Amino acid sequence: MKPDPALTVLLVEDDDVAAESVVRSLNRIGAPYPVVWAEDGIVALAALRGEDAQRRVPRPRVILLDLNMPRMNGFEFLQQLRTDPLLKDDVVFVLTTSDAESDRTRAYHAHIAGYMVKAAVGPQFARLAQLLTDYDQAVRLP
Image 1 (cartoon, rainbow, N blue to C red):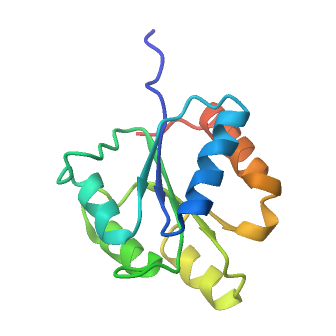
Image 2 (tube, rainbow, N blue to C red; image 1 turned 90 degrees about the vertical axis):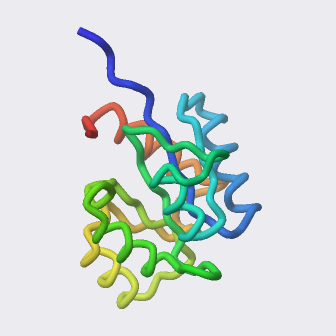
């Protein structure tokens, strides 16, 4: 039986310091996941649709999505993603600074897999890295 291909992480984040912290946390625990960084929802959709020659995001993949971004915010991205027949089933975890109940509710209504507040995921995103590793080991993605 052939092993599943490696999980790819699409990080949709406009803050380069936060993006680098996520990558470092994955490297620190030895997570073997390539990370593709998109600075907003427009860039992320282009990458997912194969329209960006510099960014390839093969399946299986998990999307880590910030909500507060310029040009196309996380909610606008989710709306586009969920209405695209080729992307609507992608797994999305929100990773944001917002702890507002209205944002959590709205995000879960867009069928996200989880909602994480950056301040609560631990120093240097350690809990996030462990979550991705555990998720990859427990779940089989299309």
